[in-house]
Image (cartoon, rainbow, N blue to C red; front, side, top):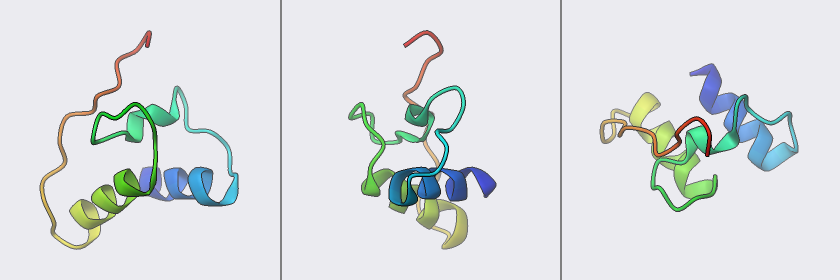
Length: 61
């Protein structure tokens, strides 16, 4: 849960970048963190939406 808040703050309020990469929140594998990713994670974690998929991010990318 704190990770989704961190991603939201980074994306929408210019907060600190998640470590090791913001792309750890890229659930649709399009190579960027955007509103669609945050909505998916929020729905999955807080609203009983679809299960969380394996992250696309790999260390060393």
